[in-house]
Amino acid sequence: MAQKITEAHEHVAKAEKYLKTSFMKWKPDYDSAASEYAKAAVAFKSARQLEQAKDAYLQEAEAHTSNRSLFHAAKAFEQAGMMLKDMQRLPEAVQYIEKASVMYVENGTPDTAAMALDRAGKLMEPLDLAKAAHLYQQAAGVFENEERLRQAVELIGKASRLLVRQQKFDEAAESLQKEKNMYKEIENYPTCFKKTIAQVLVHLHRGDYVAAEKCVQESYSIPGFSGSEDCVAMEQLLQGYDDQDEELVSRVCTSPLLRYMDNDYAKLAISLKVPGGGKKKPAAAGDSGAAPPEEEEDEYAGGLC
Figure (tube, rainbow, N blue to C red):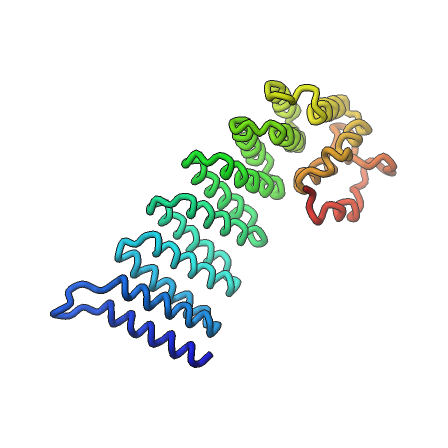
């Protein structure tokens, strides 16, 4: 370990020498300096000196930036972010990854930018759902600008689920509508059906029956939706909700069709309240006003696919 640290400092010294100017050397040698800083960073990392590795990557990034090598500068910023991740300093890590993504776009490599933002979103999910959702939306926007709708819609889907998890239902409704429109554009109609179910659940949790009904009506124009299992279930759910028929709503919301949706939407189904009634209970429920037992939610803790 001591040998690696010594090696790293030697590379830093060489880099600093390349950056110096003199009477005979008017311009710093940024390319050589960047190479030495990169070697120093690797050596510091091997010695588990993560703070110093991070600093070396930042110095590498600065040298590449001065040399207008934006792609390599972005890579170095991303590596600095990874050192911060390993030090459990996630918000700082994400700042450098976002900075890298901007440079990737400027360099004309938007795919790399979007993938970096996706990775940043995954880092932030355990810590800050709102920030993670924003990062996924940013990544989706980059793909969308490149007309890469299949990649964009997957990221919008991640954002939608995180918005639901935060109970930001207004934003979730907008995100789901965008998802459904994209899936319709790429002619993935079965997934449009699932997004309609998600929309209905979100709108009913918002207390907006009219918007929920409108989502189903709009979906009649999607090939194969009318008469499908998804369509029939949503018609029954809306009828039960409008009639305050708790038994019908419960039957639909506990059906396999809804139980095995993505975890966040399945939880919306089992927690849906009927207007004028108590919280929805399974068929063998006791007091309709009682909250479902903890074990009922645990059933979905591992996620549903």
